[in-house]
Amino acid sequence: MKTREFGGTGMKVPVIGQGTWQLPEKGKDRERAIHALHRGIDLGMVHIDTAEMYGEAELVIAEAIKDLPREKLFIVSKVLPSNASYPSTITALEKSLKRLGTDYLDCYLLHWRGHIPLTDTLAAFEKLEKDGKIRSFGVSNFDVDDLEEALDCLTEGKLACNQVLYNPSVRGIERNLLPFCRKHNIALVGYTPYGGFPGKGDRRLSVLKELARKYDATERQIVLAFLIREQGTFTIPKASDLAHIEENSAASSIELSPADLAVLDQHFPAPDRDTPLAML
Ligand SMILES: NC(=O)c1ccc[n+]([C@@H]2O[C@H](COP(=O)([O-])OP(=O)(O)OC[C@H]3O[C@@H](n4cnc5c(N)ncnc54)[C@H](OP(=O)(O)O)[C@@H]3O)[C@@H](O)[C@H]2O)c1
Image (cartoon, rainbow, N blue to C red; front, side, top):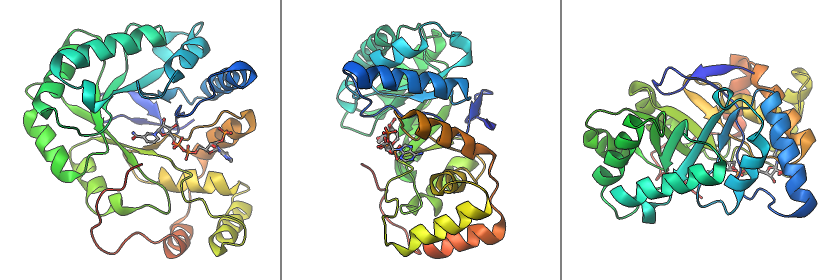
């Protein structure tokens, strides 16, 4: 699995990680999901993305990682905006750690911007980092103006990550946000990589199929390879199916040629004007 330095933290993180939103929480499906997470970790997808908002996902992850060496994993969770005051952020982190069965997070994010002043949340993140409860911190669903404000609030810490919606059909971030993140050495983690994946009869599916044939890959792998083509980018597909996990992990070694990137550009064009940041 290919890795990249993560947002100035010095940590090497796999370019393809594992999302956990809507992970099955009950019965046999939960067991399957645990097995799949485990397999993903074995294959190098040690970046596990979760959130206090994702139901029991943190508990399911805890089961998957309980016998694994903690230092090999890169675990990210997120605080809800409604819990993002200084004291509630600290409490929310403690609860996430308890559910995950660990004593630190590798990165802690504000899930999206709410009404609580950013200074409060970021001061709590800086304190948690200083206390060794989190190794880095960042935000999610922030556009350039929000990031600028966040950077201004920092006293000693560093913004390591911005997690945003990014897939071939939603490429607005490439105009301003991605260059801004690169300039400030903020890791750009793209979520929902398979959003807008073309269905049967869509011309764009034939384009992906053609490229897949050329790279001895699958259409989904071409999508992931496209999303991690730029320095500083990461992607976190969610899969609870073992075959999907194996397929996703193998995409990190695909290097699309400039000519093939141009083909994708033509069929999945980035917007030609600034657009509001898309989010789920
Ligand atoms: N920060 C935020 O606001 C935010 C918002 C949304 C998501 N996220 C994070 O990003 C992660 C990923 O996004 P997402 O869950 O919305 O969507 P996604 O990863 O784009 O898609 C997940 C769906 O794709 C299927 N899938 C995965 N690999 C596949 C493959 N190789 N072939 C065919 N189907 C495949 C999964 O099926 P199976 O499960 O059956 O394998 C699942 O139905 C989330 O889980 C979450 O951790 C963050």
